[in-house]
Amino acid sequence: MKPTWNPESDQVNRDQVSAYDEMRLRCPVAHSESLGWSVFRHADVMRVLHEHQTFSNQVSQHLSVPNGMDPPEHTVYRKIIERYFTSDSVAAFEPTCQQIATKLLREAYGRGSDIEVMTELASHFAVRVQCAFLGWPTDLHDPLLRWASDQQHATGAGDRESLSRLAAELQLIVNDLISNRRLNNADTNNDVTSSLMNETISQRQLSNEEVSSILRNWTVGELATIAASIGILIHHLAQHPDHQSLLRRDPSMLPVAIDEILRVHNPLHGNRRKTTCPAQLGGVDIDAGERVYLNWIAANRDEIVFEDAGTVKFDRDPQHNLLYGSGIHVCPGAPLARMELRVMMESLLQQTASFTLDPTRTAEPAAYPDSGYTTVFTRFQWK
Image (tube, rainbow, N blue to C red):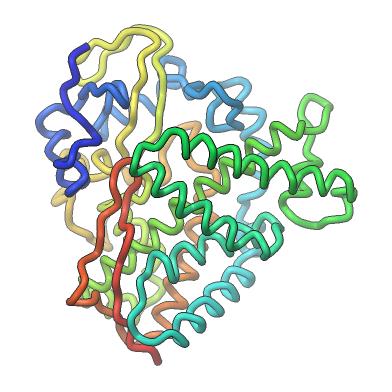
């Protein structure tokens, strides 16, 4: 198959959002060597999401619970996962999240008005809330920050050797946490990691491999998407003082505002699928066993579904927003992520009078396959 586009080209990386908008109009189902078939239109993405018999989630050679599973196996594990993201669980964690956000912003206040958001706020918040949610020790903050930074650089450079090393490094961190808890009796710990280790399936306890897979998936997803989301949100509000002023006057609008801002600039690049049988998407015939890549950024900016799609409108109907996916694989952690982002932005608006982009330094967009920004230089007027 001759490639019809290159997702890693300089042209795409200069402005991913515009490049995907152009692909959605010009070639909505496109082939590349690195991704296989990329799907850019909202309707085509929705079809893939809801036809899981044809478009399988079993795309990895490694165990991935439950992301890389199909029904009926996926259904059983999904029920276990969902228990950790109920409204009661999220509400119970909110005060801890508020404390983390407040402390982090006080630390930023002590450094002055000029803040680089991604390295000084976003990544720290993502690591701290993840460790707190899972019950992991605070001495993992710095190692996980270094790991996330190295992961981003290796991904951007396409350095497969470093990516393999980093995957093994995260695996070792998680395995050590599980092993230590097994040795010290996980029943005595009242946290998410210990509870997960004591879950059962088919009348047996989850294996170390299964627990490790769940924790890895949660951690990789949390660190990347929460940090990217905060950068995108702050960048947007710094560029749009009218939106910033509106949310300062009425913080109750934050939940819908956050989802809409992140619809226009999605923090998650995409997800993979594999065809189980011949299929057709966008008039293109796709053989069985082919890789299919869902481009969230493009699908969530589809003009057919969202009028004036590239414009943030807080009163827009959120029904078709694919920020957290759709179908049986819709993100189970969406309630937690929404709460964390709301709390962080609430705290930021409370502790500042205003914030703007630093006019002397340009925000650096993230390169494929990351989304958002690698740097967002911001000037804060603290209260």
